[in-house]
Amino acid sequence: MKKTIFISFLSVSGAVWAQQKPATRANAAEKPAATGPISEQDRKIEILAEEVEKLKAGRELFPAAKESGRYGYGPAASKVYEINQGVSIGGYGEFLYNKYARSNESGNDSNQNDKIDSVRQIIYAGYKFNDKFVFNSEIEFEHAGNGGNVYTEFATIDYLHHPMLNFKAGLMLLPMGIYNEMHEAPTFLASTRPLTETLIMPSTWRENGAGIFGQIGDFSYKLYGVSSMNAASDPTTGVKSPNFTSQGFRGGRQRGAEAIANEFSGVLRVDYSGVAGSTFGVSAYYGKSGQADLHVHETTIADAHADVRIKGLYLRSVVSFANLTGADRLRNAGTGIGPADQMYGAYVEVGYDVLRFFETEQELYPHIRVEKIDTQYKVAAGNVLDARYKQDVLTFGLAYKPIRQIIAKVDYSIYSNKAETGVNQLNFGLGYLF
Image 1 (cartoon, helix red, strand yellow):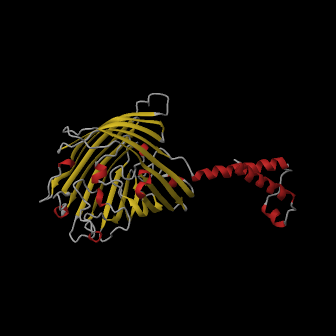
Image 2 (cartoon, helix red, strand yellow):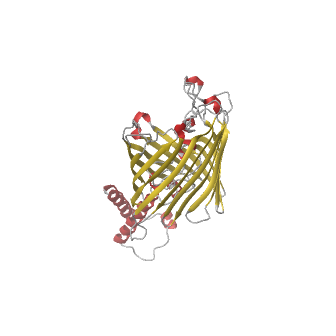
Image 3 (cartoon, rainbow, N blue to C red):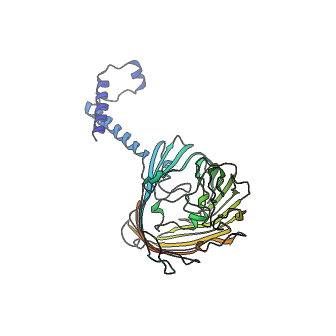
């Protein structure tokens, strides 16, 4: 406030000094002839009004996040696209408390400790150079930064050529499923993300690369070329356990950090948004993922997804299927367990805002998610079946938004698997975005 008054004082003082200074020929040429005398008080008011307009214009650098995002990103990640020029700052975060059952589904000790975690705190920093060039980035502090868990989640430069054809390059989020690009805590209801979009599509999944994207009528598309995952461990590190495991592909992410780039992959996404409040689409990923390994490992992942918001309805559904060649060469030498030749996962999540019938901006969603995932669907020849990862998960609970940017969650998850080692858990979550 003091800074604003000081700036205004300088502006007014300068204006008064300029009024007392004799006019030059240049001054007279630049300004139209006065139609009448202007009092010193009127001039001061005019200068102050100009300063107020400048302050208002400065707010455009830090606008509030809108309800929906752009280009597949969440609301906070999309803020840089909304400003005219300059710096944009946004962010989101979430906290999570998990209380585990003391016994698993077979009645044995679960050996699980309850946990409370500052899961992730995010800063989006972007810069809009002009109408064509945009830099956008996400810096993530996981688990309160413990153990150096600070990541660049994505960092890209966009060239916005035309709504039908734009370009992107840098550290990119792969456009698969729903959560990988749009994962801000208030944009989803459950405290935890679906396993299908964690293990098969290994959210959060990012790789260095480049590509194109655009909108043609009611259809949007993204086509990227990126560095491949690394299925096998790098022999130069001395680590012998494969990165692809019986749990899925998550360990194969290279995250853009000194990534081995002997092999590259392609990813394509097409979405239809012709129904108001809804998105229906498909995406596919294909590439060789042997990297430092001499053997060929071809990885294919495909999904169909739906994300619906109609009035108070919240509906999400994803079906994903994956195929891996050379899985038999990736078994763990000590256990014989390894990734499967084929995997699949599917979930349906439904919620409804029961407060939409009342005169309030608050939202309350009872919700339920049913998921089936099998990362050991077709086990590679010679590999041992890991029955823990033939799983069914049922999650139900409540999500409450006192305002649009803040969400409080409570839900209960029932885990079941073929090995009968599933452990149920009660979850409490708190999230925000800005």
